[in-house]
Image (cartoon, rainbow, N blue to C red; front, top):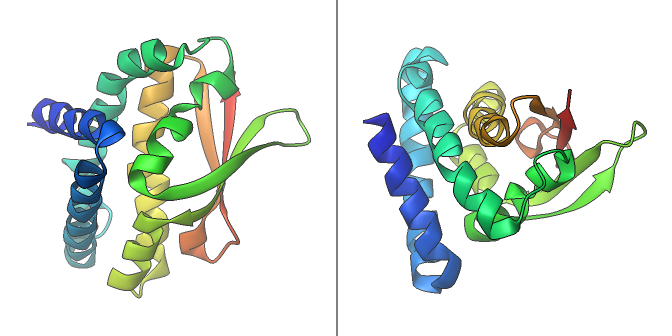
Length: 175
């Protein structure tokens, strides 16, 4: 079932790349999914996501990696190049952001607006729920994507809009 979900989501992303109506449909589906996930969290906490959603988004990350490598000509030895999945998915998901470099020279994706963050904060008055969604569900997808390209890749979330920060900040590294 997780693999089927990964194939479905990847297919929707591919369609949404070129079609505004499919992008709209994908975002509406994501809004419904966020609402469902918030209800699950309210009933059972983080454990409600650990059985299916976190592994399913990890599976999606692994499944999409070969497509992204080819489409974006990703250098598997560059953390910034691997992190370019943001450049692919952010416009589709309704995320606005840019790249910076931190004091260590690591690339940092800075996201200043996010439809999913807005959905999470609208659906849940529990900031822990919203933060855990990003720290576990989104992180699983992004780390699985990067690790499928380079097993030494790691993305670290250091700030989140859902936790009251001015932006989401994702540091990309190859260890």
